[in-house]
Amino acid sequence: MEPMIWRQAEQALAGLLAARFTKDIIRKAEERMRADVHGTLPRWISAWQRLPQTGSLDLEATRQTSAVVVSNAEPIDLEPLTRLLMEFHPWRKGPFEIFGTRIDTEWRSDWKWNRMAEKLEFRGKKILDVGCGNGYYGWKMLAEGADFVLGCDPFLLYVMQFEVFRKYAPQPHRHFVLPLGDTDLPDRMQCFDLCLSMGVLYHRSGPIDHLQKMHGTLKPGGQLLLETLVIESDQPAVLVPKGRYAKMRNVWFIPSVAMLEIWLERTGFEDIRILDVSTTTEEEQRRTPWMTFESLADFLDPQDPRKTVEGYPAPRRAMLLAVARK
Image 1 (cartoon, rainbow, N blue to C red):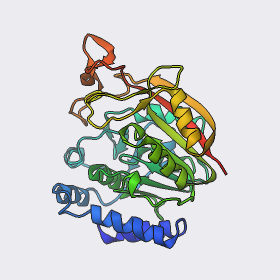
Image 2 (cartoon, rainbow, N blue to C red):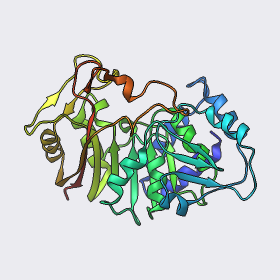
Image 3 (cartoon, rainbow, N blue to C red):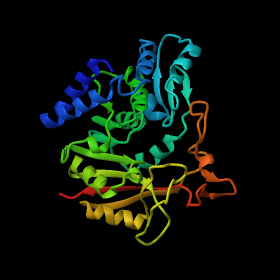
C-alpha cells in the first residue's frame, strides 16, 4: 500500500508501544505488502484506487445497524462500484454497506458481535484483534467508543478489504489492520486493555503458545475474549482430527470448554467466564453472491448435519472472557 498508510500506522502505534516494538511491527507489515510477495496485490490496489474518492464511514449508523456503513451525499453509479468490490471476492466477514450497496458476506458476523457486545465494555479501551479478517469487529468496537483498535491478519486480501473502508474513515485514523499473524507480534507488549482471539486457536499447532502470546499483549488486569471451536464434554478433553476437519486442513486441537478453562488458567488468566456456547448453523455461515465458494452446508454430512463430512461433531463454538493475572 502507499507509504502514507505505514506512516499513519506508525504514528498511531508510537503512543502505545515501545519504539522497538513499533519499528519491528511496521517493518514486517511493509515487507508483507509487496507486489512480489502476492501476485494479485497490484490488481487489488488498482481496484482500491478506482473507488469513489468521496464518502464517509458513518460510525453512528454502524453502531445502530448490523452493517459497517459508508455513505455519500452524492449519487453513485452502483453497477461499476459492485464490479470493483467484487475484485476483492470472497467477502467472508460482515455485513458491510457502501454507498447503498449491501455486501452480504459468508458469515453473519453481526450475530457473533451481538453475543459479545452486550457483555463487554469497549469505551476508552485500546484493543488488539488477532486474526481479525477484514476488520469488521474493529469498526464495531470503534463505533462503541473504543479508543484504538489494531487488527492483525496475515491474509492480504482481508487487509485490502479493510482498506476499502478505511479509505472513508474519520481522521485521525484509530483503526488499522496489519498483515501479521500472532507469531509476528513482539513478546510481552503488555499495552492493550482487551485482546480478541476469535477463530484462531484451533489453527495453532501450539495452542498454549498462542494463549501465552495473547497474555503478553495485555496490561495486567486486561481482558482476553477467546472464541474457538469446542467439543461437547463435561470433562477436560481434546479432539485431534486425523486429517481435515470440516474440509479444513489446518485444524489441530479442539478442546472441551473444561479443557479450555485449564489452558487459560495455566497460561496466566483468571476470572474466566463462559459468555456463549452455540452450534454454528447454515443461517449464520452460508454461501452468498459475495462469497461463491463452498461454505458450511458443504462441510457437513448431507445425511446427518450433526457431523462433518469426515464424521466429526459439527462445528460448535465457545466464547470465553478471561482476565490477565496481575
